[in-house]
Length: 419
Ligand SMILES: *Cc1c(COP(=O)(O)O)cnc(C)c1O
Image (tube, rainbow, N blue to C red; front, side, top):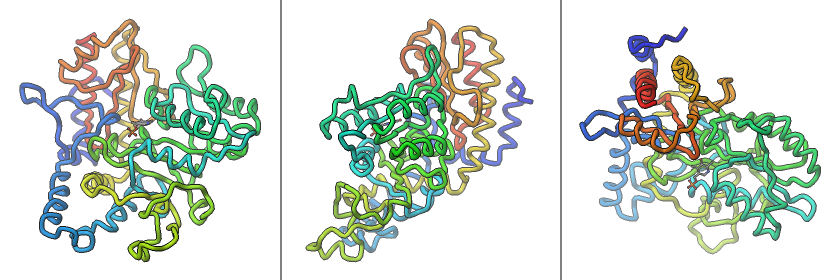
């Protein structure tokens, strides 16, 4: 069905119902002023053109209103995070009460573990996937240590079979059986940043819960990419950042999901702050902590409005495009990339991402035998912005919101020349 030609790629673009969104973004240019082929939205999403306007609006309100902006700004700062909640909830498939934007990703992971990693002397182990993102690994290791456990014993890795790259559910089940009654938490990065594998959220959650564990996901590479359906699939918590597929700018705030079943539980351990306190009495100042039900109750600080303005600019685009539509296009776009890579018929190339489209997001991780970082350098010189992971993997992530079929076609042409 796919065809290996520029005409075909352009025809797909012409028929793409989401094609107008490409124009809503700034594309980095090479030294000759030509737009680059940007396939790095898994690392840092592009800047929406309207982000500047959203930021200017807050700067203007701050200049003209000073502290009054908390209540009088066009988008008042006091409840500002609420303007992000509905569209964020739509993207991750959650109820609004289950979602809040706050802090950085790794900080949120720690705050979630304060509540959902409550080890006992017997049940204290944490399972993560092998090749987890380093920050996640450091976070869980340090939590183990914080509670007085040795990470060498307390940290269990869900590993792929020998010689393979992808994890299998049956191995996770075996690991849980082997450490029966010892595992307190399953914390999985989804999708995996290296292989692009989308682990089944529902099945993992069920498995974890059957074995008496809490289950959380790090959706840094999943949010705005896959359809995690968090409420329905039922994990206890999830965390993510907004600067990758969600295009909200370098180091922007992260997001948190806490399942409804924990919304009213005031007895959960948590590290509290005044922004998690009852909104109607927050400014009376002298009261006992009165936690807000739901995810908002985990907030600590009054948030950086400029970062939230950038998030709002991007979420407005997602809201307009619709996550289901984006996923639909993503399946076609990444399918086209896979097709063209196969057409190369080059034995040096192997895609390590799952072939099953339901087990991956938009990213394909291309392993190139005997390649080194030089290859990536050459691709960059050829105007392709992709991402290199040692030892030999190029990660490319066609983002359905702004990438085109022509981008994908051009990328493979340039890769072919570079090889
Ligand atoms: C990008 C990423 C991070 C980065 O963490 P920050 O706290 O935002 O710096 C952590 N974990 C995963 C899985 C990531 O993909």
